[in-house]
Image (cartoon, rainbow, N blue to C red; front, side, top):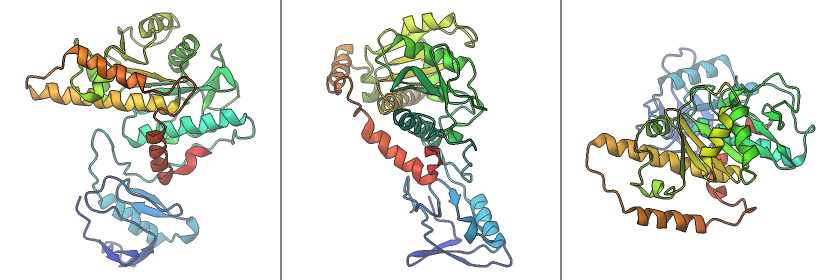
Length: 353
């Protein structure tokens, strides 16, 4: 990605020249770290920064002037940052978190930690460009109240979710805490049904990604043509399309189709991923999404696909399963999940509130 011609390095600082702003021809901004050409991500300072990788601008109000704001807004509008289907740059100023009272002192420490982790998951998927407007939900079981679960309010984008504005539902699908935000019935129905039926599951993700929805509409289902997909050999469930989830009757059929699997395609709809922890659920989602993208790209090429013998695919899946830590150990996926948490926290740490 070429560096725009109005940015130049000057030692530890950067000079921004904006000829369109008459009264400010040059503004020297210390601690402004542009992305180096060709880099995929960057490390942004915690106080104020503008990074070309995510195109996020944060600047302390006390240090802002009208001319500074004009120049930086102009620079943002001039930047055209390419976004792949895997990791779309969030090329807007970071949205303020939905303003709700903090829940930190109203819930247990265990629930608060789970709220922070689930809010981070929403922000990560938003950063990756995989949200479908305000649709889709992820959920997490409350550790010290296993019949309660957390889920996103329907009206909020993933990028607006915080630890405090998550909804908490009980086993009757009733809100545990009064809140101005609620989740549509479909979210608690799908996720609550899974959590009720599967005590081994503590986190769920439901998405409508382009690649996932495409594979969900294929008669062949997921093909084990890549290492990403082979880990799911013998581990994928399918649920036929029944329209919008407006009634509870679909829950038992969905659970029956899921069985003991952790990954399911909702045909002509999307994907449902479950995990023993949020990091594990995220890791499964990542590899499933990669597998679907590779399949769609490979089949679109028109070339004859090399499909390994199913026995080899099952061996690979078995080897991956045997290397998982025992139940109760939440280390699966934690390394990668925490790496992504650091990335979104550098953009906007507000999800922790």
